Amino acid sequence: MTVAGRLSMVAAYLAFAFVGAIVLGLF
Image 1: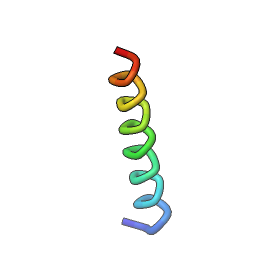
Image 2: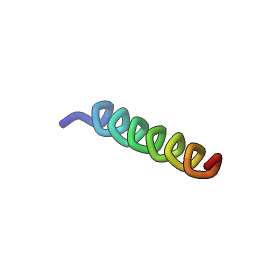
Image 3: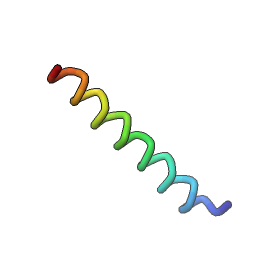
Image 4: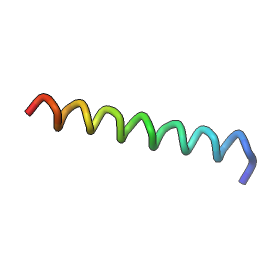
């Protein structure tokens, strides 16, 4: 896997975790 692919995967995972934390914080 390329470095760009790995960074994009990490960025997507962090964004998903960030949105999940916001949703959990709202409820």
